Length: 262
Image 1 (spheres, rainbow, N blue to C red):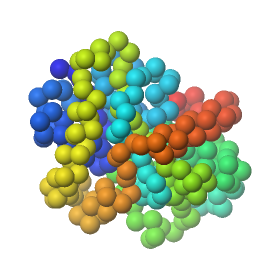
Image 2: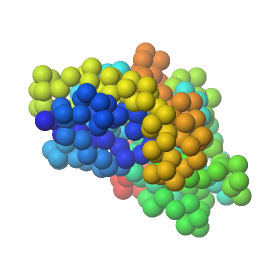
Image 3: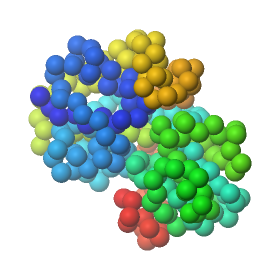
């Protein structure tokens, strides 16, 4: 069976629901990791197919399975940039580097909307420690969902909302990528689309299980998966992805600490 690496965050649960619980479950060997680790497993051959940060697709020479991924078309809630100084004055950014797309999105937003190019400091996702170590912090995924932004004593940005305001386009964070050398007849692209459709049709079960497993309010889980995250990647999402990758390519190649996270 093809080895599939899926992301361990809440936003991937509907994507893999069919692969784990549906009629596709006997066709793939599914394991879980953070986004950057999924990319690394594809790079070194430990996985054949993975949900990977979009910035990794070209770098790793991956073949994209179209139609399904992780995106947003406005506030995403799970990618927060928190700052104790005005955003244009950020000089150091403590970054959770588990998602390389989110790190580059922070760089793009800060450069284009706030004229800031901070030094990036890789850091574990503990917000109070991050804020003590730098002017600002980038926190993503489930750790960001555990934070109530409105109760924070600092300024904050939802980077999905910032991207939408800047470009008018959806933001694509991750896509299904297939490692070079994996035969197209060894998997079915339709399986990955059917998997997420099965997940969204079984949302009540997902909410009931995941809010307990992750210690999150059920209403937060439901709202996040239905209002913040987009799983269908259509033409607008493809346009957003191309725009994002173009802007990333224009960032300074010699930005401080970038080599530590890419």
